[in-house]
Length: 451
Image 1 (tube, rainbow, N blue to C red):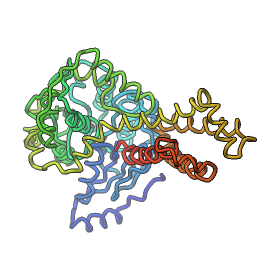
Image 2: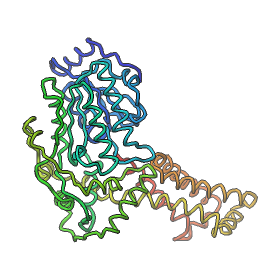
Image 3: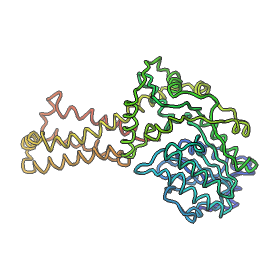
């Protein structure tokens, strides 16, 4: 993660490889592994520009960029940012988190970290900054998300830089994450769920936002401007879901208006999942922001850039849904259920082994010739089961815990076959039930990734 050698020779080679580009950009891109950031990265690289991509987690690197792994929320001194600015012409900030949690810090990401970066840019002479905020951030702050987004804007506006602030509405595109994934998952439900207290939203296409970022990266583009970036048509949440349902060809659904207590329960369950490190889009922050909706005035953006925003229906119609899209929509809703059942199974199995199943376990150990280590073996197995269950429940440890669950299931099957082969004779016994458990672990491994 040292300072790269971005010299003149390097840049002339990059320009030549890109087909003679004379003004290849050198961009520091924050949030490069996110929905918006990864799309901006792909576009910049495709057009022959050089990108130093900043992301917190490893393993999400797209080709064509130089990757820097750091936690923006912890990089709060301008000196720490200087090492990443040599050779940089422009900065694009696509970093953002919805809600505070075990690994997320809204103020750290939206204010403290980027304020330090913008101070470093001013000191280093890196003038052009394109900052992705959120629609409504300049109005009433309904949550820590919108409040810190506003403070991040103010930190940038206070600097002597050529800044551009874009405030997109809900962003959707062919990639699915956050709101766009939620719309698809909700469309796969057998009922069209209408949540109470949700305002309209002017859906924004990801491609239009990426085009806007590239427009404002040009040195000739206007600067020191802030504008809403949104579609023209205000849509209710259930209308958006209905559009996705038609696109996915799921047929006409029943309609169900959720009472406030049920909506509150869904948001609370989202907060519970967030406490374990997961990032569901339906959380208490989303509830507060839903009340205001995601609407604004895109006319300044449209007249400045010349970009005519695509409507949701037009964008969906241009790319028919594939069977993979239908799979994803169904699995998106099943994912929390799969992981909850997997975690609960292992925790309950361990607790039962230490409680009402203790004597049964001792009989199995005696029959298998392991009476001498019976109690110790049962306790060790039970604790391993419980540890695996809690490992699956937490996002950071879910993947290794699922591998451990599969391995331990295989161990139980092989050991049981050797010591107690008669268990295979019981059609609803423990040996036959290992198979669906192992398959469930494989399914969970296949869908555990967030993005």
